[in-house]
Image (tube, rainbow, N blue to C red; front, side):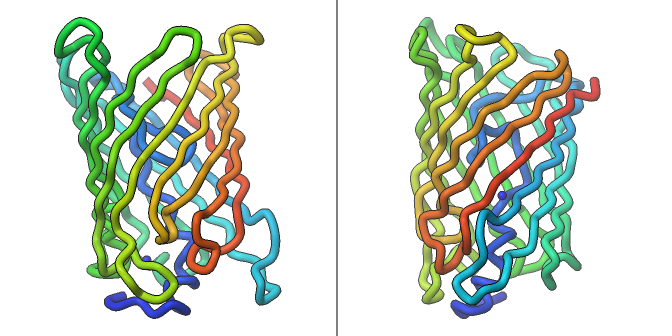
Length: 246
């Protein structure tokens, strides 16, 4: 789906910006997938609250839109860069630009049976200690036959922005996911579950199903359960449109 020394109240008001400048992802967290060289991918992600906040108000919907471009012409070492514009009806909307980048290797690239690996960063905002979450992460992923793909990793970000409801640091955590094409039903159907650790607004357990309407267009329908509703607010439904432009 974020100010120097955020207070708990201010952090809560900015919680919708917990969603990120989207590298190639699962439902919520990054994946080890990397866009192919010269490919251009467009994501349009929406997050809408599933219920009212405790105070009786509704958290504003979040819209995230932007391109991701593959930039390396190699098979065993790939890279992508991109940006997103985010809008959530908050003061931080005046600085809506967020950058992301990723370097990765597919499974079997390092040696026979080696996992896919990725090193990247996202939510590089342009306003100091407000939108600059500056998250760096590493991931490894492995397909295990019909069980699907499992991935694990770790992230670290700006400890002045990624905080809990008390303003304490909550800028690190694990990244875990499972995903699989449900070929027993259709090769167009995909499912995923992912988890981002920590008590900042980023921490969440997410579930999603995607349907490929064409070779270049798919839509994810998901649900995000936040680790800390005092900072992230109510859980959200998400609809994510993914289009490979070329």
